Image (spheres, rainbow, N blue to C red):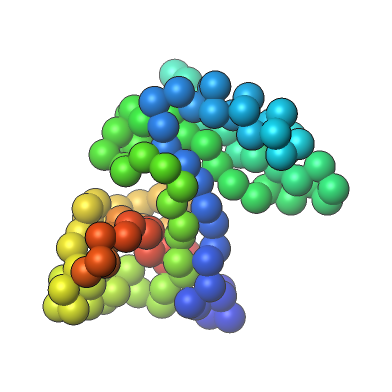
Length: 123
């Protein structure tokens, strides 16, 4: 994963109507859909019809995603989420979501000094 540091490793969207948004992108872009179990409901992994590669996620704004800002969110791969989160604050940004576990790794959500949001991810 060291080779991926600094690259955008994932993109997803957290919205109130994930099912409607899933349907929209399935029809407009042509993505295939795989359900991703979240316990008592499913979020969605959007899959390229050309090669079967997972390309994005569409998530319900509830459960573990309740505090995640709406809209598309990029996940930038970093070597150390905790160190990067500290650097965010030291350099004029803010943490919207403190570092926590996610899919075999850790992530946090930040706001840069200009107000743009992104996630930082460490596997």
